[in-house]
Length: 236
Image (cartoon, rainbow, N blue to C red; front, side, top):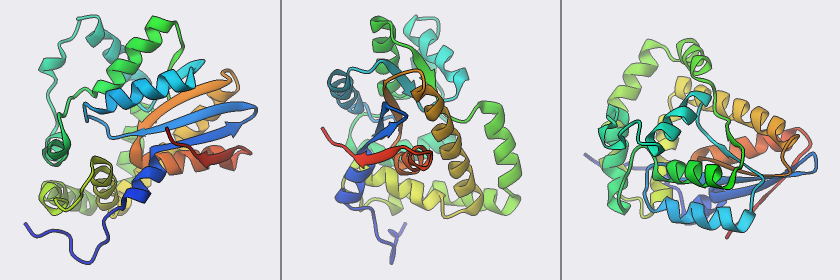
């Protein structure tokens, strides 16, 4: 499969700009941490962020329904080794494995769930709810979009072989998927929902660590800033 020609791949500077944003909203600090979901080494970065920020609450970019699943895995009620990846996850993981071990469910979310519960911190979900996602998908994705998506994702690992970091790979993957209009609108709907939920959380928690897919950091930060907050890049 030929690599993407004539399309600029994400640079290290772009990846760094997605890595972390601090948004001050209503007197609260919301620390948005962008992760390459599934990359096992992100757990170490998560631990460093947690200890530095010392959050009063933790928010993860998953639907509410997924929190129970994460806790069930940690309690041994579900076996994470029996997790069956979807075709999309398999394709995405194929390219991501060039940069290290890949784990699903994501190791960084399991670590964060465990640490929040150990510290007695509120653990909050802030992604689009599952039923809202299904409604949005049904409304926005037509048959042509779906055909284009299915044809594209299995080619992407080889077409993105020129990416040099896992962050660049994750951003390039997202960029290609969002070239399809229906899927781009889904991600915009997710960012709208995540920004709204984080604004609500910020009214109750003065310092919040919010973990989300790397590609969703700028849009989610912008939604927070649109409501009177102030966003800036932040790095470890």
